[in-house]
Length: 164
Length: 164
DNA sequence: CTGCTTGCAAACATTTTGCAGTTCT
DNA sequence: AGAACTGCAAAATGTTTGCAAGCAG
Image (spheres, rainbow over the protein chains, first blue to last red):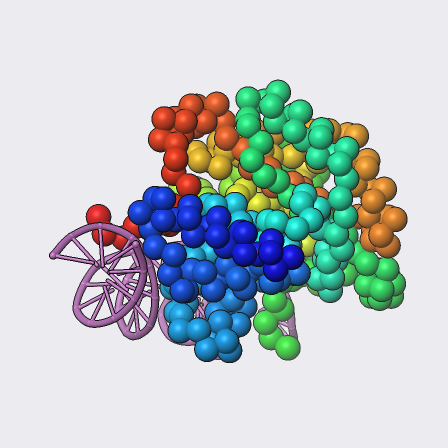
């Protein structure tokens, strides 16, 4: 695992160098943070962690580093409902999908090789070379469902009733 | 089709009224615009169209109306890659999915009942009541693929090389 | 009349950018 | 040395909100 990390860091730094880019401390630290994650995170999470870690880094650099890692396919953006995006590292469990509760935001993961395969086929048939994919699946977890059942009838509500 | 529109508008207005809400001109016009779409759109598109149409409306109202329509399940947000969201109307072809080209943004749609069904099963098994879902599938269309092949080697590039 | 809605402008949250100084190779 | 990088603060996006005035029922 640690070995795996070193290998990926090594791979990243040499990829950078071979392109005339620098493997700066900030860049590597962002990657290290990413490799250490198990969950989803956003730019602020990375920034906060590195600050805590006393690594001198700015918000702009975190954004730039994450964009760089995304191009290297070391992190990926996934949507987690309600117009919000989070990153997750690409290594580790590949091609799992997320179901999130539309009410409380709870996330469940699953993977379905059969679905993956079919998507591969469909995109090829459509003239696309598959690069990456993930799903946004909204549902109601049991708790929220029960809760809402009482409060039902709430249809076409006003987004922000402002007064109140 | 026009009948279908009237029916849905009727449905929307009475749903609003039954909740003590008003079916104002702005609200209805946003819905009309939505029903007339074939593609994806964002709040700005709606605003621009209504302005052109001489309908007095403000940006804030468009956002509020869209949020309202989303709660009514008349529009839905879908992610179209690169952290960007667009709306699409819910009626019409249901549960199709999008593959977009990661380079040029071209969108292709498809639908796969078998996949839909499997997702339904998986979410139920996980204790979720499925509400809605869509996929984000990134690929490379043939043209972009060809184009990139010449320019290859571009790995781990710097997001914004800033100088020049 | 009452109170839901609107428009405006200010507020916000998030991400990007220009530039001068710093660091890497 | 020289190009690439960083930090900062300003700017750009995209969306939300408070409030006074305006309509709908």
